[in-house]
Image (cartoon, rainbow, N blue to C red; front, side, top):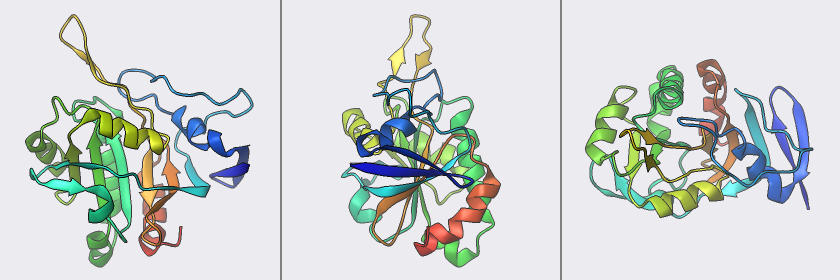
Length: 223
């Protein structure tokens, strides 16, 4: 079996189907170093920073039930069914990549017509649930957009869901000096409302301008 992983501007990297998510995982260099992940062979280089990747074989939405930033149970599959969704795995103490990514998305969302803004769901899933309480998630996300949803809860369930989507996530480690190391992938996943699957993956460094160009098509299920 083979699949094509299409990257902007108009390049195609042929890889075995089992390596599609592995190739994307190699871009996971956020917040504390590069997490260990299943690596593709040397002939399959990781996508460059700021790349929009279209999957020929869309990835299904994982079953994941966590607590949202309002303290309510949030079933990902049920609560987002038939809706355009951008999802990101990160943590609020992240010094650079996470806030930059959320700010870029927020700036792009603000440029959409109000009707389209209401349709889109932006979900931030914490990879550091021990420190990212619902209250902290709510306060942190509100700085970007009050409509963004934060999810926290069981780490093992979060890691399993992330890995099913090709996102490398490692359990947070508290260091001897009291600091934390939190390794996680830095990709934004775009779920289509047409089939609730990931058709587009945006690597770290994707600009607000690129999100602005793609969001209307994602919301319509045309990308």
